[in-house]
Length: 631
Image 1 (cartoon, rainbow, N blue to C red):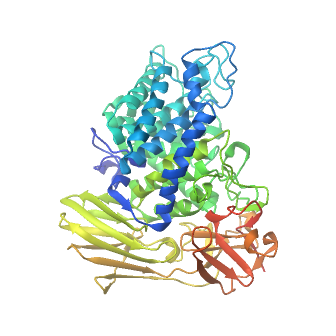
Image 2: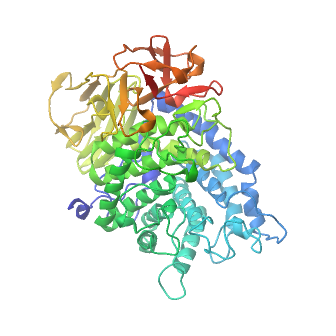
Image 3: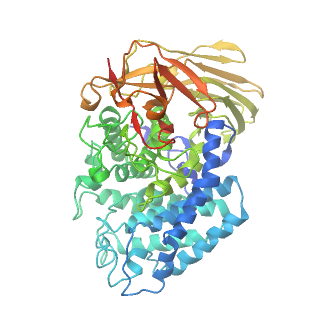
């Protein structure tokens, strides 16, 4: 209870936002991705694909599908024009600019910067004098998009997405401002935010409204940190406090009851995860313990009853929603890519609040499976849902009419290096194992460390202190649940093979022993340049069994190795993979195939071949199975 009262560090710049004016926020701070230089082959390939393929593709699709034209049309309203598409199409532009802005911080590119500026000229021209900007209404105010209602905000708790558009606009604008120092996008976002603050609230002449689709809550926290204007934080808190009290009250948008009374994840999974993230942000900045208590309860519900083995969330196609407890079908699992990204956002914020490695365990599982399965290895095709079984009808697409997942991938992948480390005072957390070099200031001075590893293909990790101006500090090395015999931090899944794995830690070649603190192996010393900590984790294929209450997985086993979940796919197997059967006592062999799908570890059980789940569907549509029949 006291932790929330001891908030000393600045609110972490999640997805690269760094505080500029106010103080107060999460007890633990994110080490931003701009402090981390990745040299890792696994993530380096994905970052390169994002830079060279995904983001350029997204910009081209914004041109091709008329996203930019919408802003032009908004400057010349036409009563005869039929407004099609989706009322949130504007956000594809904002999200792609956000991802491109992250790239600019690491890879300066004058041509890319100029292109973004040219797009922002169109966006600025479409903004109304009082700040309102929503092309789905403005293109034809007399007959706007069917979802947005006859007047401003009349359907914002339903389908208009006016506040959702604000959220992604702000996220993109803050990223662009930090990347370039220019205010051309930031001023647009400020003007729209101010418009909403004037018109929405409890004051005379204002309307009581909350977002139908959440994200404005955490975006407004970023705007508060970027500007120092508390009114943005106040509006974020207003949106949360009013939820469950306005005219629209339903589980689909998590408005069925006040947020502090909620204890189960329900409704649209992306909206839910964004709301939980916003609750964490506002709690960190205001000390609102009731928010923390609520998301603690909800997190426990997800991890113990509603989380897929891949880290995916949202089991139902109907409403893109969480199902009932233990409702985790495989063939019809939805597991939207955006929801997996939202799950990363939520779990990282939970870690920043509580400092427990269990949240990073869930984040890592989601990142290596449920998120990156959503984009092809070359960065050019995508999944919207990510099922754990396929009868051959599921395949990657080059784009979608509803393009929220590809554009979300645009903004997420470049920010991944920002999840590797975190810091608190004189503590440096090593959360993810990625080959990289990082320089960050701790209390007392800057520290440069490097990681050398072939993770996730190897459990060997070396962390070297290259330079230390901070004096004595504590290196907190996460020991993943998978090596400690824990699949997830609940009884939802358990290893079924009776094996045990362990780990060893050494300092400068000498073995080090110690107890774990919240899942971290801690070494405190006055570090010298050249000091090296080696973590050796036994990484081998393991069989996993689901809780008996998960009907879809009864009598079935899955295979994982380290952080990766595996699947059987048609190109590698002569047999029908949907009928394949295994036993928990089977001897599993493994082989690294550098010639297959960018290089990966293949696991074999007799004549059955398994590949990492993220890599399926790269060789054409066909059958795939994660949960295999148990003999």
